[in-house]
Amino acid sequence: MTKPKHKKAIIVIAIIIIVTVPLSFLANSFIEQKIGEELQNVSESTKIEYTTINANIWTGHVEVESPTILVSGETTNKTILDAKLKSIEINDVGYWDLLFNDKITIESLVIDELVAKYKHNSVVKNEDYQSSFLDKIKQVIHAEKIAITKADVLITNYESDSIILSIPNFNFEVLDLQIDPKASTANKKITYNNFELKAENLKWATNTYDDILVDDIHFTNNSAMLKGFKLKTKYSKSEYSSILNKERDHFNLSIAALRFDHLDFGIDNAEKFYFNSKKVYLKSPDAEIYRDKLVTDDVSRKLLYGTALRALNFNLGLKSIEIEDGAISYLEKVKTDEQAGRLDFSEMNAKISNLGNTFGDQETTIAIQTKFMKNSSLKVDWNFKVSDTTDQFMFKANLGSFNATQLAQFTKPNLNVDLNGELNQTYFTISGNPYTSRIDLKIKYDDFEVLILKKDGREKNNFLSTLVNLFVSKDSDEDKRDFRYGQSDQVDRDVTKSVFNFVWLNIRDGLLSAMAGNGEKEN
Image (cartoon, rainbow, N blue to C red; front, side, top):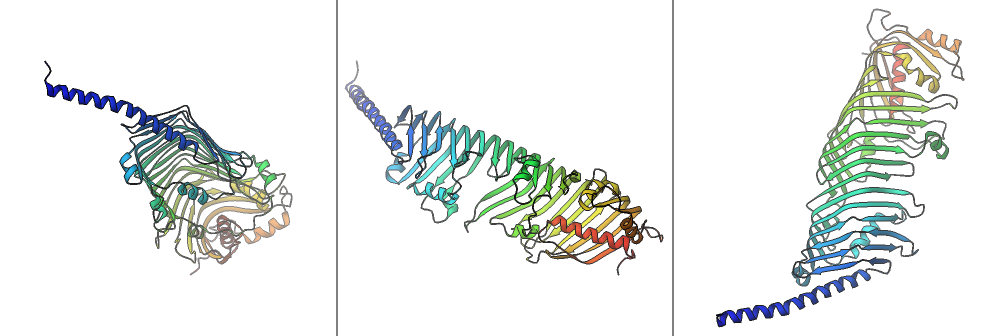
Protein backbone atom coordinates (compact mmCIF):
# COMPACT_ATOMS: atom_id res chain seq x y z
CA MET A 1 0.00 0.00 0.00
CA THR A 2 1.24 3.45 -0.88
CA LYS A 3 2.12 5.59 2.11
CA PRO A 4 0.38 8.98 2.56
CA LYS A 5 3.70 10.91 2.14
CA HIS A 6 4.44 9.13 -1.11
CA LYS A 7 0.91 9.88 -2.30
CA LYS A 8 1.45 13.57 -1.61
CA ALA A 9 4.78 13.55 -3.49
CA ILE A 10 3.18 11.84 -6.46
CA ILE A 11 0.33 14.34 -6.43
CA VAL A 12 2.75 17.30 -6.26
CA ILE A 13 4.83 15.90 -9.13
CA ALA A 14 1.70 15.28 -11.16
CA ILE A 15 0.50 18.84 -10.54
CA ILE A 16 3.90 20.23 -11.52
CA ILE A 17 3.86 18.18 -14.72
CA ILE A 18 0.26 19.13 -15.48
CA VAL A 19 1.08 22.81 -14.96
CA THR A 20 4.58 22.82 -16.48
CA VAL A 21 3.83 21.04 -19.75
CA PRO A 22 1.14 23.50 -20.87
CA LEU A 23 3.17 26.44 -19.59
CA SER A 24 6.23 25.17 -21.47
CA PHE A 25 4.12 24.77 -24.58
CA LEU A 26 2.74 28.28 -24.15
CA ALA A 27 6.20 29.69 -23.40
CA ASN A 28 7.69 28.00 -26.46
CA SER A 29 4.81 29.24 -28.61
CA PHE A 30 5.23 32.75 -27.19
CA ILE A 31 9.00 32.73 -27.96
CA GLU A 32 8.39 31.38 -31.46
CA GLN A 33 5.77 34.06 -32.08
CA LYS A 34 8.00 36.79 -30.63
CA ILE A 35 10.97 35.73 -32.81
CA GLY A 36 8.67 35.67 -35.84
CA GLU A 37 7.47 39.19 -35.08
CA GLU A 38 11.03 40.43 -34.65
CA LEU A 39 12.09 38.85 -37.95
CA GLN A 40 9.20 40.59 -39.68
CA ASN A 41 10.18 43.97 -38.24
CA VAL A 42 13.95 44.08 -38.73
CA SER A 43 13.63 47.09 -41.06
CA GLU A 44 11.47 48.38 -43.89
CA SER A 45 14.10 47.33 -46.42
CA THR A 46 14.48 43.76 -45.08
CA LYS A 47 12.03 40.93 -45.77
CA ILE A 48 12.49 37.58 -44.00
CA GLU A 49 10.42 34.47 -44.64
CA TYR A 50 10.76 30.96 -43.20
CA THR A 51 9.03 27.59 -42.99
CA THR A 52 8.86 27.09 -39.22
CA ILE A 53 10.41 28.28 -35.98
CA ASN A 54 11.09 25.76 -33.21
CA ALA A 55 11.93 26.90 -29.69
CA ASN A 56 12.55 25.09 -26.41
CA ILE A 57 12.58 27.25 -23.32
CA TRP A 58 14.27 24.59 -21.19
CA THR A 59 17.25 23.90 -23.44
CA GLY A 60 17.52 27.42 -24.86
CA HIS A 61 17.33 25.94 -28.36
CA VAL A 62 15.91 27.95 -31.27
CA GLU A 63 15.82 26.85 -34.90
CA VAL A 64 14.55 28.75 -37.90
CA GLU A 65 13.99 26.38 -40.83
CA SER A 66 14.45 27.33 -44.51
CA PRO A 67 14.72 31.09 -43.98
CA THR A 68 15.07 33.46 -46.93
CA ILE A 69 16.30 37.02 -46.55
CA LEU A 70 15.79 39.84 -49.05
CA VAL A 71 17.34 43.24 -48.42
CA SER A 72 16.59 46.21 -50.70
CA GLY A 73 18.53 49.42 -51.20
CA GLU A 74 17.13 52.21 -49.06
CA THR A 75 16.83 54.65 -51.97
CA THR A 76 16.48 52.45 -55.08
CA ASN A 77 14.41 49.53 -53.72
CA LYS A 78 16.66 47.28 -55.83
CA THR A 79 17.46 43.96 -54.10
CA ILE A 80 21.02 44.07 -52.78
CA LEU A 81 20.98 40.84 -50.72
CA ASP A 82 19.22 37.60 -51.59
CA ALA A 83 20.02 34.83 -49.09
CA LYS A 84 18.56 31.35 -48.69
CA LEU A 85 19.49 28.93 -45.90
CA LYS A 86 18.70 25.42 -44.83
CA SER A 87 18.49 26.55 -41.22
CA ILE A 88 19.66 28.95 -38.53
CA GLU A 89 20.17 27.18 -35.22
CA ILE A 90 20.84 28.78 -31.83
CA ASN A 91 21.75 26.64 -28.82
CA ASP A 92 21.62 27.40 -25.08
CA VAL A 93 20.39 30.98 -24.95
CA GLY A 94 21.30 32.63 -21.63
CA TYR A 95 17.94 33.92 -20.41
CA TRP A 96 19.35 35.23 -17.13
CA ASP A 97 21.84 37.49 -18.94
CA LEU A 98 19.12 38.54 -21.35
CA LEU A 99 16.66 39.50 -18.61
CA PHE A 100 18.96 40.94 -15.96
CA ASN A 101 22.35 41.81 -17.50
CA ASP A 102 21.22 43.40 -20.77
CA LYS A 103 23.44 40.89 -22.58
CA ILE A 104 22.78 38.20 -25.17
CA THR A 105 24.76 35.02 -24.54
CA ILE A 106 24.52 31.81 -26.53
CA GLU A 107 26.49 28.59 -26.68
CA SER A 108 26.43 28.33 -30.47
CA LEU A 109 24.96 29.81 -33.62
CA VAL A 110 25.03 27.58 -36.71
CA ILE A 111 24.17 28.95 -40.14
CA ASP A 112 23.75 25.94 -42.43
CA GLU A 113 23.94 25.84 -46.24
CA LEU A 114 23.79 29.56 -46.85
CA VAL A 115 23.44 30.65 -50.49
CA ALA A 116 23.91 34.42 -50.58
CA LYS A 117 24.01 36.89 -53.46
CA TYR A 118 25.00 40.43 -52.53
CA LYS A 119 25.27 43.51 -54.73
CA HIS A 120 28.04 45.83 -53.56
CA ASN A 121 27.70 49.57 -54.07
CA SER A 122 31.22 50.99 -54.42
CA VAL A 123 29.89 54.48 -53.60
CA VAL A 124 29.21 53.37 -50.02
CA LYS A 125 32.41 53.28 -47.98
CA ASN A 126 33.37 50.18 -45.97
CA GLU A 127 33.33 52.30 -42.81
CA ASP A 128 29.66 53.08 -43.42
CA TYR A 129 28.78 49.37 -43.62
CA GLN A 130 30.58 48.70 -40.34
CA SER A 131 28.97 51.71 -38.66
CA SER A 132 25.50 50.66 -39.85
CA PHE A 133 26.05 47.11 -38.55
CA LEU A 134 27.19 48.22 -35.10
CA ASP A 135 24.54 50.93 -34.81
CA LYS A 136 21.81 48.29 -35.01
CA ILE A 137 23.27 46.34 -32.07
CA LYS A 138 22.27 47.75 -28.69
CA GLN A 139 23.34 44.96 -26.35
CA VAL A 140 26.57 43.09 -25.72
CA ILE A 141 26.51 39.79 -27.61
CA HIS A 142 28.65 36.83 -26.61
CA ALA A 143 28.75 33.48 -28.44
CA GLU A 144 30.95 30.56 -27.53
CA LYS A 145 30.82 29.43 -31.16
CA ILE A 146 29.49 30.74 -34.44
CA ALA A 147 29.68 28.49 -37.50
CA ILE A 148 28.81 28.94 -41.15
CA THR A 149 28.74 25.60 -42.97
CA LYS A 150 28.56 24.73 -46.67
CA ALA A 151 28.04 28.32 -47.76
CA ASP A 152 27.99 29.66 -51.33
CA VAL A 153 28.71 33.39 -51.43
CA LEU A 154 28.55 35.65 -54.48
CA ILE A 155 29.22 39.41 -54.42
CA THR A 156 28.58 41.40 -57.60
CA ASN A 157 28.87 45.03 -58.64
CA TYR A 158 25.68 46.99 -57.91
CA GLU A 159 25.70 48.77 -61.29
CA SER A 160 27.29 46.32 -63.75
CA ASP A 161 26.45 42.99 -62.05
CA SER A 162 30.03 41.84 -62.72
CA ILE A 163 31.55 39.43 -60.18
CA ILE A 164 33.57 40.99 -57.36
CA LEU A 165 33.88 37.90 -55.15
CA SER A 166 32.76 34.32 -55.61
CA ILE A 167 33.26 31.55 -53.00
CA PRO A 168 31.12 28.52 -53.91
CA ASN A 169 32.36 26.41 -50.99
CA PHE A 170 32.88 28.34 -47.75
CA ASN A 171 33.09 27.15 -44.13
CA PHE A 172 33.82 29.36 -41.14
CA GLU A 173 33.97 28.94 -37.37
CA VAL A 174 34.82 31.50 -34.71
CA LEU A 175 35.11 30.81 -30.98
CA ASP A 176 34.43 33.05 -27.99
CA LEU A 177 33.11 35.94 -30.09
CA GLN A 178 31.97 39.11 -28.33
CA ILE A 179 30.44 42.23 -29.84
CA ASP A 180 30.34 45.28 -27.59
CA PRO A 181 28.89 48.27 -29.48
CA LYS A 182 29.71 50.60 -26.58
CA ALA A 183 33.43 49.72 -26.35
CA SER A 184 35.74 52.73 -26.35
CA THR A 185 38.04 51.64 -29.22
CA ALA A 186 37.49 49.81 -32.50
CA ASN A 187 39.73 46.86 -31.54
CA LYS A 188 37.51 46.17 -28.51
CA LYS A 189 34.14 46.37 -30.24
CA ILE A 190 34.57 42.94 -31.85
CA THR A 191 36.82 40.39 -30.12
CA TYR A 192 37.32 36.64 -30.47
CA ASN A 193 39.57 33.83 -29.26
CA ASN A 194 40.34 32.04 -32.51
CA PHE A 195 38.74 31.17 -35.83
CA GLU A 196 39.06 28.78 -38.77
CA LEU A 197 38.12 29.51 -42.37
CA LYS A 198 38.12 27.01 -45.23
CA ALA A 199 37.21 27.86 -48.80
CA GLU A 200 37.56 26.44 -52.30
CA ASN A 201 37.60 27.96 -55.80
CA LEU A 202 37.71 31.60 -54.71
CA LYS A 203 37.54 34.29 -57.38
CA TRP A 204 38.14 37.94 -56.43
CA ALA A 205 38.17 40.88 -58.83
CA THR A 206 40.85 42.99 -57.15
CA ASN A 207 40.41 45.90 -59.57
CA THR A 208 39.08 46.76 -63.03
CA TYR A 209 41.71 44.66 -64.79
CA ASP A 210 42.92 41.78 -62.58
CA ASP A 211 41.44 38.73 -60.83
CA ILE A 212 42.79 36.64 -57.97
CA LEU A 213 41.90 32.93 -58.09
CA VAL A 214 42.63 30.42 -55.31
CA ASP A 215 41.91 26.69 -55.44
CA ASP A 216 42.05 26.06 -51.69
CA ILE A 217 42.24 28.30 -48.59
CA HIS A 218 42.81 27.35 -44.96
CA PHE A 219 42.97 30.38 -42.68
CA THR A 220 43.20 30.55 -38.86
CA ASN A 221 44.02 33.34 -36.44
CA ASN A 222 47.73 32.35 -36.49
CA SER A 223 48.35 30.76 -39.90
CA ALA A 224 47.19 30.75 -43.50
CA MET A 225 47.69 28.40 -46.44
CA LEU A 226 46.64 29.18 -49.99
CA LYS A 227 47.04 26.52 -52.68
CA GLY A 228 46.75 27.16 -56.39
CA PHE A 229 47.01 30.95 -56.08
CA LYS A 230 46.75 32.92 -59.33
CA LEU A 231 46.78 36.60 -60.26
CA LYS A 232 45.62 37.09 -63.83
CA THR A 233 44.72 40.02 -66.03
CA LYS A 234 41.17 39.46 -67.30
CA TYR A 235 41.91 40.35 -70.92
CA SER A 236 44.18 39.04 -73.65
CA LYS A 237 47.26 41.16 -74.31
CA SER A 238 45.78 42.75 -77.45
CA GLU A 239 42.39 43.44 -75.81
CA TYR A 240 44.16 44.89 -72.79
CA SER A 241 46.23 47.32 -74.88
CA SER A 242 43.11 48.50 -76.70
CA ILE A 243 41.29 49.54 -73.48
CA LEU A 244 44.22 51.13 -71.59
CA ASN A 245 44.62 54.91 -71.64
CA LYS A 246 48.18 54.57 -70.32
CA GLU A 247 50.66 51.71 -70.08
CA ARG A 248 50.14 49.09 -67.37
CA ASP A 249 51.57 45.61 -66.78
CA HIS A 250 49.65 42.55 -67.97
CA PHE A 251 49.96 39.83 -65.29
CA ASN A 252 49.94 36.04 -65.35
CA LEU A 253 51.16 34.86 -61.95
CA SER A 254 50.69 31.48 -60.31
CA ILE A 255 51.95 30.17 -56.95
CA ALA A 256 51.64 26.47 -56.12
CA ALA A 257 51.47 27.19 -52.37
CA LEU A 258 51.57 30.38 -50.29
CA ARG A 259 51.90 29.96 -46.51
CA PHE A 260 51.94 32.44 -43.60
CA ASP A 261 53.28 31.13 -40.27
CA HIS A 262 52.92 32.78 -36.83
CA LEU A 263 50.34 35.13 -38.27
CA ASP A 264 49.02 38.08 -36.28
CA PHE A 265 46.64 40.71 -37.60
CA GLY A 266 43.91 43.04 -36.43
CA ILE A 267 43.36 46.58 -35.19
CA ASP A 268 45.90 48.04 -32.75
CA ASN A 269 45.29 50.49 -29.91
CA ALA A 270 45.77 53.39 -32.31
CA GLU A 271 42.88 51.92 -34.36
CA LYS A 272 45.20 51.11 -37.27
CA PHE A 273 45.18 47.79 -39.11
CA TYR A 274 48.30 45.61 -38.79
CA PHE A 275 49.43 42.40 -40.50
CA ASN A 276 52.45 40.47 -39.23
CA SER A 277 53.96 37.08 -40.01
CA LYS A 278 57.23 35.58 -38.81
CA LYS A 279 57.62 33.47 -41.95
CA VAL A 280 56.09 33.58 -45.42
CA TYR A 281 56.78 30.72 -47.83
CA LEU A 282 56.14 30.73 -51.59
CA LYS A 283 56.46 27.46 -53.48
CA SER A 284 57.07 27.57 -57.25
CA PRO A 285 55.87 31.08 -58.06
CA ASP A 286 55.76 31.58 -61.83
CA ALA A 287 55.17 35.06 -63.23
CA GLU A 288 54.91 36.43 -66.74
CA ILE A 289 54.75 40.23 -66.84
CA TYR A 290 54.08 41.92 -70.17
CA ARG A 291 54.17 45.64 -70.98
CA ASP A 292 53.09 47.19 -74.26
CA LYS A 293 55.27 50.29 -74.76
CA LEU A 294 53.10 51.29 -77.74
CA VAL A 295 50.45 52.38 -75.23
CA THR A 296 50.75 55.94 -73.90
CA ASP A 297 53.50 56.24 -71.28
CA ASP A 298 52.60 56.30 -67.60
CA VAL A 299 54.57 59.34 -66.49
CA SER A 300 53.53 59.19 -62.83
CA ARG A 301 56.30 59.18 -60.24
CA LYS A 302 57.48 55.66 -59.37
CA LEU A 303 58.51 55.10 -55.74
CA LEU A 304 61.47 53.04 -54.59
CA TYR A 305 60.36 50.06 -52.50
CA GLY A 306 61.50 51.60 -49.22
CA THR A 307 59.43 54.71 -49.89
CA ALA A 308 56.40 52.65 -50.93
CA LEU A 309 56.57 50.52 -47.77
CA ARG A 310 56.95 53.58 -45.57
CA ALA A 311 53.87 55.14 -47.20
CA LEU A 312 51.54 52.18 -46.47
CA ASN A 313 48.36 53.18 -44.62
CA PHE A 314 48.61 50.09 -42.38
CA ASN A 315 51.38 48.40 -40.40
CA LEU A 316 53.10 45.51 -42.19
CA GLY A 317 55.71 43.24 -40.66
CA LEU A 318 56.90 40.17 -42.59
CA LYS A 319 59.98 38.96 -40.72
CA SER A 320 61.14 36.32 -43.20
CA ILE A 321 60.04 35.45 -46.74
CA GLU A 322 61.33 32.37 -48.55
CA ILE A 323 60.82 31.76 -52.28
CA GLU A 324 61.51 28.27 -53.62
CA ASP A 325 61.94 27.35 -57.30
CA GLY A 326 60.43 30.50 -58.78
CA ALA A 327 60.43 31.91 -62.30
CA ILE A 328 59.86 35.40 -63.74
CA SER A 329 59.60 36.42 -67.38
CA TYR A 330 59.42 40.07 -68.39
CA LEU A 331 58.20 40.93 -71.89
CA GLU A 332 58.26 44.39 -73.43
CA LYS A 333 56.79 45.28 -76.82
CA VAL A 334 58.10 48.43 -78.51
CA LYS A 335 57.41 47.79 -82.21
CA THR A 336 54.16 46.81 -83.88
CA ASP A 337 55.77 44.39 -86.32
CA GLU A 338 58.18 42.80 -83.81
CA GLN A 339 57.60 40.26 -81.09
CA ALA A 340 58.02 41.50 -77.55
CA GLY A 341 61.55 41.33 -76.16
CA ARG A 342 61.87 38.83 -73.31
CA LEU A 343 64.03 38.47 -70.19
CA ASP A 344 63.81 35.17 -68.27
CA PHE A 345 64.78 34.33 -64.69
CA SER A 346 64.33 30.68 -63.70
CA GLU A 347 65.23 28.29 -60.85
CA MET A 348 64.87 31.27 -58.53
CA ASN A 349 65.41 30.87 -54.80
CA ALA A 350 65.27 33.92 -52.57
CA LYS A 351 65.24 34.99 -48.92
CA ILE A 352 63.87 38.35 -47.81
CA SER A 353 64.16 39.68 -44.26
CA ASN A 354 62.29 42.48 -42.50
CA LEU A 355 59.85 43.40 -45.24
CA GLY A 356 57.46 46.03 -43.97
CA ASN A 357 57.30 49.32 -42.10
CA THR A 358 57.56 48.10 -38.50
CA PHE A 359 61.23 47.11 -38.16
CA GLY A 360 62.74 50.47 -37.21
CA ASP A 361 66.45 50.68 -38.03
CA GLN A 362 66.71 47.03 -39.09
CA GLU A 363 67.65 46.62 -42.74
CA THR A 364 65.43 45.00 -45.30
CA THR A 365 67.63 42.45 -47.06
CA ILE A 366 66.93 40.56 -50.29
CA ALA A 367 69.15 37.66 -51.35
CA ILE A 368 68.39 36.01 -54.71
CA GLN A 369 69.98 33.12 -56.59
CA THR A 370 68.62 32.40 -60.05
CA LYS A 371 69.35 31.45 -63.65
CA PHE A 372 69.32 34.34 -66.13
CA MET A 373 68.17 33.49 -69.66
CA LYS A 374 68.12 29.79 -68.63
CA ASN A 375 71.88 29.23 -68.61
CA SER A 376 73.71 31.88 -66.58
CA SER A 377 73.91 31.95 -62.81
CA LEU A 378 72.93 35.24 -61.19
CA LYS A 379 73.24 36.20 -57.55
CA VAL A 380 71.75 39.43 -56.17
CA ASP A 381 72.08 41.03 -52.72
CA TRP A 382 69.97 44.10 -52.09
CA ASN A 383 69.43 46.06 -48.90
CA PHE A 384 67.83 49.28 -47.67
CA LYS A 385 66.22 50.70 -44.53
CA VAL A 386 62.54 51.52 -44.76
CA SER A 387 62.90 53.98 -41.86
CA ASP A 388 65.60 55.93 -43.74
CA THR A 389 63.77 58.87 -45.30
CA THR A 390 66.72 59.51 -47.65
CA ASP A 391 66.10 56.02 -49.14
CA GLN A 392 69.73 55.01 -49.52
CA PHE A 393 70.14 51.52 -50.98
CA MET A 394 72.83 49.01 -52.00
CA PHE A 395 72.36 46.60 -54.92
CA LYS A 396 75.04 43.97 -55.67
CA ALA A 397 75.04 41.36 -58.41
CA ASN A 398 77.28 38.54 -59.62
CA LEU A 399 76.55 37.22 -63.14
CA GLY A 400 78.28 34.05 -64.31
CA SER A 401 79.20 32.99 -67.83
CA PHE A 402 76.77 34.56 -70.28
CA ASN A 403 76.57 34.60 -74.06
CA ALA A 404 75.58 38.13 -75.09
CA THR A 405 73.66 36.86 -78.11
CA GLN A 406 71.03 35.56 -75.67
CA LEU A 407 69.98 39.18 -75.15
CA ALA A 408 69.43 39.76 -78.87
CA GLN A 409 65.71 38.98 -78.73
CA PHE A 410 65.38 41.78 -76.12
CA THR A 411 67.98 44.36 -77.20
CA LYS A 412 67.19 44.22 -80.93
CA PRO A 413 63.52 45.22 -80.75
CA ASN A 414 63.92 47.46 -77.70
CA LEU A 415 67.28 49.16 -78.27
CA ASN A 416 68.15 48.50 -81.94
CA VAL A 417 71.36 46.93 -80.65
CA ASP A 418 72.69 43.43 -81.26
CA LEU A 419 75.42 42.05 -79.02
CA ASN A 420 77.93 39.27 -79.68
CA GLY A 421 80.54 37.78 -77.40
CA GLU A 422 81.00 35.91 -74.17
CA LEU A 423 80.75 37.58 -70.76
CA ASN A 424 82.72 35.22 -68.53
CA GLN A 425 82.06 36.97 -65.22
CA THR A 426 80.45 40.26 -64.23
CA TYR A 427 80.29 41.88 -60.79
CA PHE A 428 78.73 45.22 -59.98
CA THR A 429 77.66 47.27 -56.99
CA ILE A 430 75.14 50.09 -57.18
CA SER A 431 74.74 52.50 -54.29
CA GLY A 432 72.27 55.33 -54.45
CA ASN A 433 69.05 57.10 -53.51
CA PRO A 434 65.80 57.85 -55.36
CA TYR A 435 67.50 60.37 -57.68
CA THR A 436 71.09 59.39 -58.36
CA SER A 437 73.54 56.54 -57.88
CA ARG A 438 77.07 55.25 -58.38
CA ILE A 439 78.09 51.97 -60.00
CA ASP A 440 81.34 50.06 -59.67
CA LEU A 441 81.67 47.20 -62.15
CA LYS A 442 84.27 44.65 -63.17
CA ILE A 443 83.91 42.30 -66.09
CA LYS A 444 85.79 39.52 -67.84
CA TYR A 445 84.79 38.84 -71.47
CA ASP A 446 85.93 37.54 -74.90
CA ASP A 447 85.27 38.61 -78.51
CA PHE A 448 82.75 41.28 -77.62
CA GLU A 449 81.12 43.18 -80.46
CA VAL A 450 78.33 45.76 -80.59
CA LEU A 451 76.17 45.93 -83.71
CA ILE A 452 74.07 49.05 -84.15
CA LEU A 453 70.98 48.38 -86.26
CA LYS A 454 69.07 50.65 -88.58
CA LYS A 455 65.65 51.99 -87.57
CA ASP A 456 63.89 48.98 -89.03
CA GLY A 457 65.82 46.82 -86.55
CA ARG A 458 66.77 44.34 -89.25
CA GLU A 459 69.86 45.64 -91.02
CA LYS A 460 73.23 46.51 -89.55
CA ASN A 461 74.26 50.17 -89.52
CA ASN A 462 77.83 49.61 -90.65
CA PHE A 463 79.09 53.12 -89.99
CA LEU A 464 77.80 53.38 -86.39
CA SER A 465 78.78 49.79 -85.58
CA THR A 466 82.33 50.37 -86.78
CA LEU A 467 82.53 53.65 -84.89
CA VAL A 468 81.30 52.14 -81.61
CA ASN A 469 83.62 49.15 -81.82
CA LEU A 470 86.63 51.43 -82.25
CA PHE A 471 86.11 52.36 -78.61
CA VAL A 472 85.15 48.94 -77.27
CA SER A 473 87.93 46.64 -76.17
CA LYS A 474 87.30 43.29 -77.83
CA ASP A 475 88.62 41.22 -74.91
CA SER A 476 88.99 42.01 -71.23
CA ASP A 477 92.52 40.50 -71.09
CA GLU A 478 94.10 42.39 -73.98
CA ASP A 479 96.77 43.73 -71.69
CA LYS A 480 97.01 40.52 -69.65
CA ARG A 481 94.55 41.58 -66.96
CA ASP A 482 91.69 39.23 -66.09
CA PHE A 483 89.13 41.94 -65.52
CA ARG A 484 88.33 45.37 -66.87
CA TYR A 485 86.87 47.87 -64.42
CA GLY A 486 84.18 50.47 -64.98
CA GLN A 487 82.49 53.03 -62.84
CA SER A 488 80.16 55.99 -62.99
CA ASP A 489 79.76 58.51 -60.18
CA GLN A 490 76.57 60.09 -61.46
CA VAL A 491 73.79 57.95 -62.86
CA ASP A 492 70.59 59.99 -62.85
CA ARG A 493 67.30 58.23 -62.38
CA ASP A 494 64.20 58.84 -64.47
CA VAL A 495 61.62 58.95 -61.65
CA THR A 496 58.78 58.18 -64.08
CA LYS A 497 60.27 54.73 -64.71
CA SER A 498 60.64 51.61 -62.57
CA VAL A 499 63.34 50.64 -60.08
CA PHE A 500 64.69 48.11 -62.59
CA ASN A 501 65.04 50.78 -65.26
CA PHE A 502 67.31 52.56 -62.75
CA VAL A 503 69.37 49.36 -62.36
CA TRP A 504 69.64 49.05 -66.14
CA LEU A 505 70.86 52.66 -66.52
CA ASN A 506 73.62 51.88 -64.02
CA ILE A 507 74.65 48.66 -65.79
CA ARG A 508 74.72 50.47 -69.12
CA ASP A 509 77.03 53.19 -67.81
CA GLY A 510 79.22 50.66 -65.99
CA LEU A 511 79.63 48.51 -69.11
CA LEU A 512 80.39 51.55 -71.26
CA SER A 513 83.06 52.67 -68.80
CA ALA A 514 84.65 49.19 -68.59
CA MET A 515 84.67 48.44 -72.32
CA ALA A 516 85.25 51.87 -73.82
CA GLY A 517 87.31 53.42 -71.02
CA ASN A 518 90.79 52.58 -69.82
CA GLY A 519 89.57 49.55 -67.86
CA GLU A 520 91.58 50.56 -64.81
CA LYS A 521 90.38 50.06 -61.27
CA GLU A 522 89.67 53.38 -59.59
CA ASN A 523 91.70 54.03 -56.47
